[in-house]
Length: 400
Ligand code: TRP
Ligand code: SF4
Image 1 (tube, helix red, strand yellow):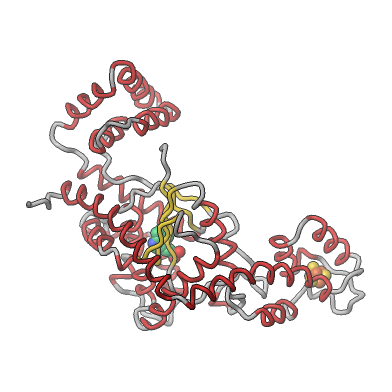
Image 2 (cartoon, protein in one colour):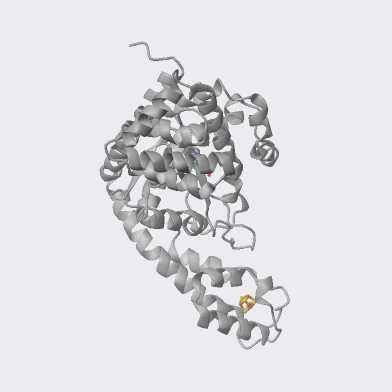
């Protein structure tokens, strides 16, 4: 589609660390300059697993927003908001639950995985089962077209696509849809109308995806046309009804598996993180005491960067020259591990220092942070209300 709308959320369950920065935030910061972006704090999602520690959530919400801002998420370029401040998410969640087969939820792989992983907690709750559907509501309520996520979230986006499709299938058939669609084609004008029909035929008869894309672009370009007509034309292209909810695409974040201090994925639950606001001396100490290739018992023993977690940090933080120096120096035992770690320590500190300075400024001015969020919530709510109007309409709930 011509205009992309990007949406993503993060659960407030603790301090953000370098894994979040490299895997998620850097991506968001880039995207905010390329597309319309909405980023939100998924506090209800956090409650599905942390229902017994609400104090952690409450504190983490503001700390997380500060981390986002400090990292460079810019409220002038992205809408920053809190899920629970846009209660329409809950309304859509409820309405979508009416058409969500239980089996679909039970089959989402994260459901059983997480229950097993967090076995100390009772996650056989209604809320936890509904986690993916709440996420669908988050996405569909903004008609988001792109959702940047890590690999573990892909099943949730696929689930969301299925829900959108099912919704459109059940509720997208307004009476007289075909006539209304034909009337909308007339409004395109003779030339464009003919083009639309040609492309629709090409798609419906031979599955020509390019024709589908061009036809969608043509519709998006129509300045004077009403949203309703645009949606009819989009729906008519694929043969279905009016497209009320938009099927989102996921955008896999490439570096979403940053290595932690022990060589496993960086994650709070492995206790191997460097948090964004970690004291810089502690950062240096943590890297200095990182394990290296166990073959390098003595300084004179050659090693292999492929077997060393420090190398994985070099891959993120070092340029080619330094990387070559590490490869040769490690394999030939011409450098020591302490020496090898030094450029990583410097690069991490260089990255964290400005973030921490900005974080301190935001932390000192809670009103500023709250205002940014309040404004974001207001903007998000406006968009959410528009979708809810259509959804209520489609489900027979507009009694006024
Ligand atoms: N489930 C996501 C995670 O754990 C967080 C999330 C909630 C989300 N709602 C979302 C991400 C909507 C993208 C879009 O990372
Ligand atoms: Fe790891 Fe560097 Fe030591 Fe090689 S020299 S084992 S890459 S820390």
